[in-house]
Structures are given as structure tokens and as C-alpha cells.
Image (cartoon, rainbow, N blue to C red; front, side):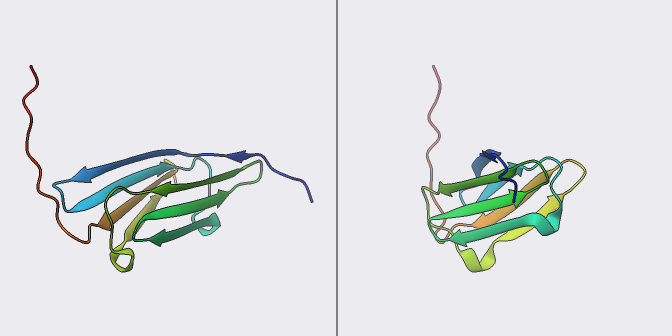
Length: 99
């Protein structure tokens, strides 16, 4: 068995209106059936395999999410996994002026 390099994928996570996380993971040239995603209320782990390497990372989230309501969509041409994870409790924020 040939050992493939382990690489952390690009991950961009941000809030949207204080009600959910929107997370984007770049998985170039990976087939949807080769992606494994596991969620808890405090974070997620992802592992995605292709012929020459394995993408893998675990990330913690600052605000708890509802893992039972996580939704995903994979855009295979772009190699982009989109994850929407609703927060367990909405967050109230205050806008701070930039001077």
C-alpha cells in the first residue's frame, strides 16, 4: 500500500447574521463519495481522499452548532464543499465603528 501525503485543505468559516456558520472547504479533484465529514456541536473533522494525497483537518467552532441540522452541498467541478451549520442559540452582536 502506497502512503499518500496528508494535507490540510483550505477552510473558510464565518458567521452569517448570527444564526449559522457558513463553511467552505476547498477539495480540488476529490470525488463526492471520497469525502467523510463528522460534526459535533463544538467542531468538525473532514477527510477527503484522491489518488495522490489525502486532505484532512479537524476544526473547533467558537459557538455551538446543531449537528443534526447541518446541510452540505458539494460542487465537484470547483472542488468546493459548502457546509451550513445552524447555531444552537442566535448571537446578538454590536457593530463597532472603525476610525
